[in-house]
Length: 108
Length: 121
Image (cartoon, rainbow over all chains, first blue to last red; front, side):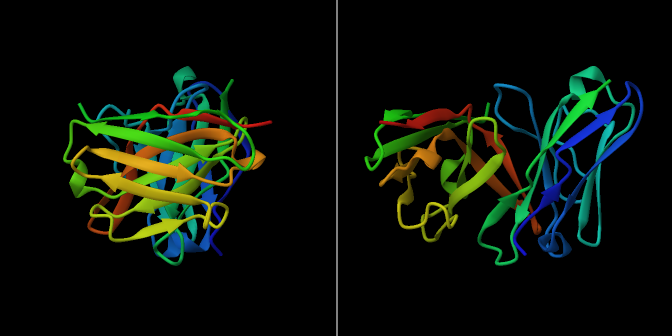
């Protein structure tokens, strides 16, 4: 399969921990990367490879993979974490890429 | 700093053509593969196409194959997307993004701010 599946909506209480998941066969071969997108803005890389963060991304965001499921975990969610989150990886062919459908994170 | 700036979007009639550009600055453009990604209004991200750093390989999503052509000019540090036979479902914000691949790990960074294409009569 060349699809990545995400839960459409996830909510978390302020200061609590939330996990956003991404499932797909290609994740057995390729790491997922994760992007945060706020309304009206371009996506921003937040996690790549085996749990790496670009400069400027807070360490409360972390990534992991188990089998065909990649996860983005936010430990101690803040109001500014409210956004859409997308996973991405190469597909099984290696020459195409695929995005998950996105998860809208609400911080209560 | 590393920056990508798209241009060329607008309103176009179904069946017509449009060419998008993505100007790169702040990094060695000719060393990186580049992608186009689009986002229909209120929808998620959709990968569109990729071109290798030297233009030697190009791959497309099934939804645009045969209608869109990705190209680049490494002397002008510019990426292009030629869109022909446009349809209503091509209406979207189109982003360009740099591909970074290191030791098998792959990601898109940075992204441009996007350019809006509206296909409508």
